[in-house]
Length: 281
Image 1 (spheres, helix red, strand yellow):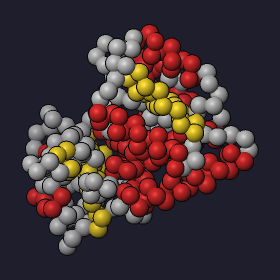
Image 2 (cartoon, one colour):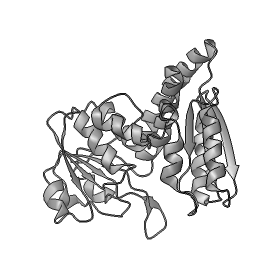
Image 3 (cartoon, helix red, strand yellow):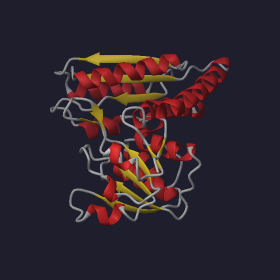
């Protein structure tokens, strides 16, 4: 058996087309959804991510503002810019690209963003909303994973889902979202003994630790759904995930590729969150 691919590129195109349609409807009512992206420093990866986010906004009919600052920008000045964006009615979503220079407290900056404009879903208020099941913004990467599961018509009710990783950005919110969908969830991490003991029993595995081949074919239940969030490089420098794709695809029922899986969905869900922020306003 060879697993069916969950195509993140194709699903992203569908969702972005819907974003463009809804954005056009808002514009007809005099509201243009706006996203402000703030980049501090010259981290090459961050520059690529930011450029892709801005382009995605423009392609989907959203207004985008890119603010670039030198790495020596003070924390106080960055907080002042965030406050000004909070007060700007033309901006519905604010994204401060991480990582930030060491002299800036990233959590303090995240908490300075208005929860109504926290389209990254990192604010404590957004995390609290996710825990309590009340309306708020879901972090984009795990939100994208949920939409991928929905796209294949997968019913999570009563299924055993194993999340590998416990980060605030992916692992923890992923587990909470799966719980909201009525899955039985196990969170595993670097201190978990015998990871395979848990993954072999899983109907769904989400791998999100940033470590190559953390999940291999012998660790997967036949027919399971495998979501690979990882972004790594193999020995030849090619992009790969956390999952041994070639081995696991011969056991799993569904699997996401890297690239072309979760990656495109992260930016797409940022657009969805920004649009919803504009609709709420």
